[in-house]
Length: 522
Picture (tube, rainbow, N blue to C red):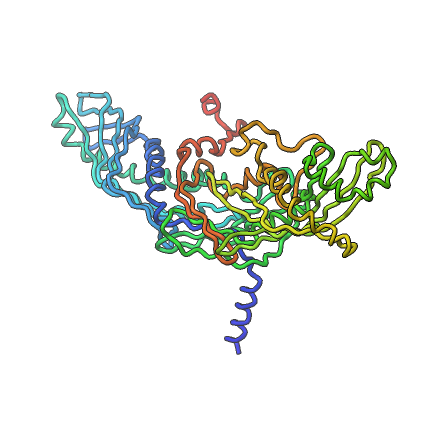
């Protein structure tokens, strides 16, 4: 009985679990690139090691070692791999550190001082980064484990007292080796929990896409790590900025990631795109109004000819008024992803009126438009972009069957005019994108754009994928599946880790009320 109850609770919890709208898989193929960039950053961090002064005596031999600086770091052998318990494990072996310090030595009445070079050989570092989800849904380095050791130290003593130095150098080198062992791990802990987390803070979690909607990339659970990859599940849901508590019910299937050949794979379910279109619908953006000379001339002539009987019965002050065409989505568009492609289903109302200046508008017709758009997804840098194409188009009247019959001759020419005049606007041509470099300015004046998908440059500008600053996708390949699509890509560091981390490094605040005068002066 207890077993059945536990099984029922587990099934209930699974049924209530939120499905991700976006998944990311980082494969072991990415680790070599990440390791090379990470080691450059690690070398710079280890060179900042500060070793306290070392002093003592052995009989009548007194020594004081100060101003110790790390001059260079040579990493001969290193390995970065996934480990289910530690998430990411970095192992450095047989490395060496160059040191430069000041010596002050006294033996009986003989004193010697100056600077000397030394080297720490056989440096071994083994550190693990534990990645987890913080309360805000952001990926964080939650813990750093570290083991570090230096097997031997060499010092280049010379001069008159070389023999004496070599005899007593054991006390100095053993002390410095001990101090180095104590200093390496704190540097790595700070680099992981503070500096790397400042890099991860650049990953968007809940941020605006434009002035109407935002997107929520909160992690739904801790990263799942296997021997070959790391999987992250994000909420991947858009929301209207005017309603931060707005929620979207995910009806789509959960995206699956099985490939491991590329460095990174990103999967988007149908709910990712459905939430975007429903958010814009809730924000009132899915509408298009064309007035006067903004209506293509061929479309203007076609509409006036179709409704000629109604227009000639109007007063002379209205007959020659500008034509107004308004398209407005009556329900949120829906996305369907199949292996053959991605389509967007749209139902909109089309209202045709005459708009005489300073007079009420005269409605000529109101009809329903049903369309199906093909959507081609591309990934550039780290922005997911959409290019739309009108595939199927149908208009009919919801008021009378006779009017629906009269609209049949308008089907083909109206579809052609929409493809030529409206679809380029939806795809962002003439709005600053690559397809608009001819200098066009898109819609302006009496035109308000947004038809059943985000308007103008929104589709071309796209939405950012949850990647840290300075990292982009290259060589992208988009693959459609049943209910979701995946993007396989390799990584490219457009900026170095040092540059990004220094830009986003947390500021160190000094409390002047408790600081000593010398500290404040410094």
